[in-house]
Amino acid sequence: MPTTRRRRHPAACAAAGAAVLVLTASCAVLSTSVREDDVPDTVSTAVTDEPVTLRLAYTDDPPTEALVDGFTRRHPNVTVDLERTQFSDYVKTVKLAMSSDDPPDIAQYNTGAMNSLVPAGLILDLDKHAAAYGWEEAFPSSAMDPLRTDQDAERFGSGSLYAVPGSLSVLGVFYNKDILAGAGIEEPPRTLGAFEDALERVHAEGTTPVGNGALEVGGFQIWNALLNVTGDEQDYRDWVYGAPGATIETEAAQEAAATLARWAERGYLSEGANATSDIDAQADFASGGSAFLITGNWAAAALAEEMGEDVGFFLMPGPAGAVPGASGASVSYAVSSQSDHPDVAAAFLDYLGSPEAARIQAESGFMPVDPEAAGGEGGVMGDIDSGFARVIEEEGLVPFPDYATPGMLDQLTPGVQGLVAGVTTEEEFLRTLQQEWEGDHG
Image 1: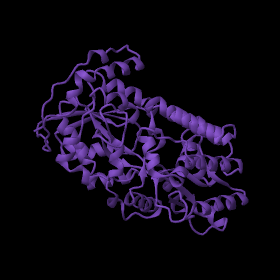
Image 2: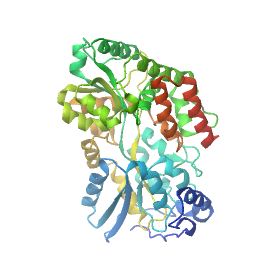
Image 3: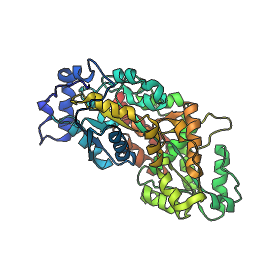
């Protein structure tokens, strides 16, 4: 039977008219009043037969509804009410919701939101559930590490577990097979030098080499993919996780930025990239407007439907002999420390690592939590499965750079736009990122 928990009522965070910044600050002060609630006294892996209703807050992603349906089919006495919010508003709304006197039982994890919710004790410490269910063996460590933090949420990658991955993603390169064949390129490039050679050959044929939507996140994803293969993995992890003394002002990060700027100067990026959205860049690629598109596997389902067997995928190649590495993230879920049914909520998290959930995750275009469950697919999904398995095997999956601080995305996007336009130097770009980092971790 699930342990029944008394719901707290933090009055300082319940004021409906309070501004978001004031609310966030108020919640941080609550750490002494609710801190003890974020670690349950006992846990159980049994799910009650009594009727239970859970509320789940989430943002725009394909797998959540299908995963909930799968879980409730197993436990028909459990009802899960879904509360969906657009991505652009999610951090703000989830802070408000989880800080209220009636929070959702489960919330899609977001690093920016956790910076105030974890210190306030409003998110359940899942270490005891992890031990009871054996999550260390069920989920890859590279997917679990970003979901760990200390009680102050100042450093990620270690500490207690505050969420469980529900599906995974990986950043890489989609390519148009017909365009490459027309440029005399018979197979995907296996080194970064060969990739640059392919860009030049496609450009010489009069086709845009790399489609890109630098208006949104597409621009920094190119820099990110290049950094994954030019830099030291541990240095990068330390920076994203907030390790003391970490820096992004490295030779590798500068090389990645200089490579992106060089590609833009040579005309390798789509014309007007800084005014192009991600979805428009994807549509242009699908219609044959560019040879390559650097983005994540979340685009695979739509591209496969539009392009059929003409689309392929490979990881961004590095120097010859380099260990495969790529940025990725998980659609992950945390549990409110104020939930009346924490063990039932934890049972949903455990379901995310099941073979049935793996099938749902794969069908939604995401990578299953269990990489072995992704095998057997053909076409572009087979390419992604193969690349992802290599990254997991080498423990080379690293977070996206915007995980470093809640405000990092606001520096990455305009910074890369400056590189693409040729008005920002590599040094200036990295300096703004490090200044943002030091403002949060310094």
